[in-house]
Image (cartoon, rainbow, N blue to C red; front, side, top):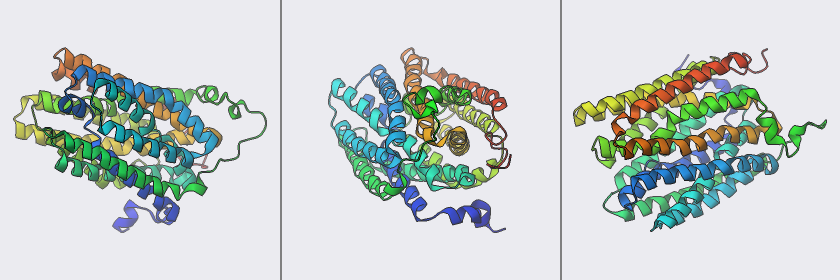
Length: 424
């Protein structure tokens, strides 16, 4: 078996038709823009505009709460209007929000800009997951999500490289240029998504008076015990992962480790490079393995990263940078497991006519964790306990993994990924 066959099996390569390639290209382009500014949110507010740490972190939390409140609306819109229309609306309005954000000058304008970005910035992820399901056969879903996640991180990594070479804490104009550059890239991505218009139409709903076809759709979604348990476990896991990474990692590096802001770009480049290089290998390894056990392993890998970050406080600067980069490789391996497995699990249990809502429910974990994690970060850093913050985050990650293992007994072998769809 040659290397290409081992990484991308021939049956999956045959499924990579023109429409699926356009989807992946659109994802890559959109994420280049995301990478330009991904890690700079709190730094932009605190170090560039001079807002307090409390204001900056709590604004991140409140903005995430705004995104959380509107997330179900995007899920319902996807089920009512189709994913492509929702994606295009989200991208265009997010571009306008980025323009506003680039020119904030006061706390009031920062609040308005943060809310706009929260409402529109992540609105396209759920519809994107729904659209990808329609472009790929069921047996290839998990692999397709893995490939898409690789494109996400390839784009973020490329954008991060540009950001690291341009951004300057002493020149606020460099931040403005990055955000405006994100606008251009976002609009370019919308063009490629628009070419998939005919694949984003509504699907026929089942007949027979099922109340899931009425306005009570969300009630039906949250009566699914499997989904509720997954969302709960995923929330805690996110608090020990992405939520903490977004809200506190840059602050910890700059203010506790006393390192340059450019180190953040280097570490994130290591992250995205690892994902790009490892994703295809990892997605093959986790194929037909218990999804809940894989997600529990993710929690362990993330805990390793946070413990290493805490230990770096006691290392020399050079050794600390090397240790953080090595630990970020471990964190990234966990990411390569989480994205394809988690999304595949949700779409395995979701009925077609409620798929938009199920994916939006999964997206709620990002919004809730994005609201809670900054508050946790503020408590530690405002009370001069920042050195203990990574240890707390590591504990949250492990709790999330334990909750994933508890979910396993409620899933069939097919839902848990231990058999191909249709085998049972």
